[in-house]
Image (cartoon, rainbow, N blue to C red; front, side, top):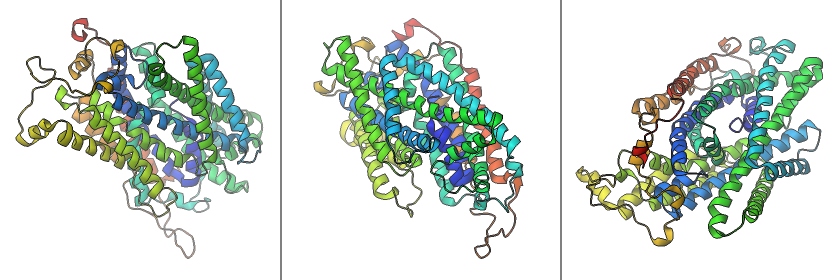
Length: 568
């Protein structure tokens, strides 16, 4: 329920109502979300078991041993999580207020609901959040399984739609070049999901690897029950609301479900469950994020400042940190008038700036491939500054803006600044290695006279809780010896990058043409089972990466190979 958030339940139907079959981009992006989460997750979890991690930043602290990089990544993760909570606030306000006929601008209902969420988080902690996630996830899945059948029986499905009489015939046209480019970038940017602290918290808290595999399967199958159904609800809802005389509702999803309620009987029951599911999905994501923020601030900021604080004091300080985070998210979400989609357009690019540090720390064949922590901190800082500046200075409210994803361009700048700083400031020997192509001995090589990266004393964190030895890439690789890791395979990575391009509808834009003079089709759009041919083709093509993900999960052992000598 944490990954299938309020945006999945409410945002996808709303986006599909307003933009048509383009809402399919969420189903197309989930393979990349899950690929990043599964492939990095198994290594992060193993490291957490061996090195005693509790927060999402612990790996960065242990691997790079730099306060500067530690708190740079911490700031990115807290910032991204608060924006994510603000998106849930925005979604909850529009949904709840529309549901009960309350003015959309009224903030009191959402404030009251988040007060309840905060109280549950204070009272029950992670156990309460995990339990509520399970219940809310079940409600969501049940409702989204029932809604399509109810609509099919009582109104009709895609095969009943007529492109000639459809309320928004332009939805049957192929996407514009700008939309196609944005679609492709959206799939790529979502690889950052694995670095979200509330998801990494779930990764560490899983009972065992078998349980984690079940979770991976649910994440892989789930989009077909949520995102694809969301597109169905939104596109069928266009005609349903048009026939009912409803135009431009503030929350299309709520308006569509109200039509189910008006049918009475079983559809009314499903409608009630669906409305409950929409609230449950938002609350599920919100409470997961709040507890993750609280844990990060408490363990990474408060505890180092007050190491002698009692457990009671730490508990109250943690509650205070979650309260402040909720207040900031409430203010942001309530004052934000551009909708949930605009919030996600800045949220994921922000989160993406933490990814290079994790990838550089997790993978590599030698320790010399690890960048200096300050190089990574400089790159991440440059990426964050660029992301906010470019989004609010160019993208936001600019209808003529080019389809440039701030996260993709931001992470490219991030990597460029990191490598430039490494070559020109912190370790010029790597630049000489690149120019002369002479191998430099690794810190992992016992015969190497080189020493690990040094930073000032003030920059060295307390890492005693992780163990006596440094976490090197050779130790990471030894932990994972005997465990299949497809992300280390160039072929698998190339296949997934290719799949993103294949799933993207790369076709001539605006076809077939609608006459501007008569507002009628010049030639009828070809359809398959009532949906545009290009949409049907993309659904079929998207099966490939999903099947590859299930194969990766199938090949995973049910427990980690263990060799104590190799991880001492």
